[in-house]
Length: 336
Ligand SMILES: Nc1ncnc2c1ncn2[C@@H]1O[C@H](COP(=O)(O)OP(=O)(O)O)[C@@H](O)[C@H]1O
Ligand SMILES: [Mg+2]
Image (cartoon, rainbow, N blue to C red; front, side, top):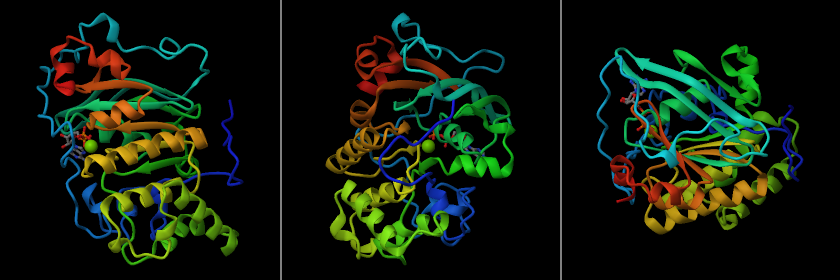
């Protein structure tokens, strides 16, 4: 099945946040840094100020999990209502999933971070991934855009196994996937207008200045910041920067959005605004999203379905309300 951008704007493809890099190489964390020297999530901040990704959130920073002994499979919840489902089981009649993750394993040295992750996302769905700090959530979505390579298992996006794609094919696919990094930030030396224009200039080389301005303005209106177009990012609040970062990631109209802790470090009201924007953009542009968070109000607002990652695999799956009702002691630690 061939995927299409089924929306109104005549832009034919989309871009990841990395693609907005002045280095233009759209392939790594480093590329998100204008200085091009970043080596970690934190370093993806142009200012290099690396605000902590695990900063204050309403749910607080969760303690790392215990790890099962080697040779034993990762656990799943004893709650019969919250067993992980197969594609088709959870939501019949929704067509093929747009993302299928099968048995993905990933280790760093002897640290088995992902131990057989099975997960899928339907078209137009918001899937929230909950898991404690260090449980491999960021590693998993980095595997999806080729920033990390799984040791085994498969990831299919738009019906294509990403491990079988050539370099050029992978880059073409990345352009259809927007990635809002945990610490992604605007380029400090550019105005908001220039920040937004950047991915368009990279990927739409023939687009006129008028068109670029019109699209930039539309995206700023989407995030409620049209007035900020000629401001420098340093003059704007953290929440405003985050909203403009979202506008910049959406400007090339990704069909899939990957949000890594989109509300972390924001106050409660601003976090809520970002969560509402995620929902608004999903409805307006029919985006399918994976939202990693441990901000429970964000999960509640955005999730069509939640999967909980524990000990390198999916432990439980359900709606926010189903999970909230569970007697499972580990699940309860997320809901207080
Ligand atoms: N490139 C890497 N090299 C070594 N260890 C890594 C690397 N990336 C992540 N890890 C480790 O993998 C674990 C999961 O990391 P991560 O996916 O960032 O967790 P989180 O669920 O908090 O997003 C952590 O223990 C982290 O230290
Ligand atoms: Mg993370």
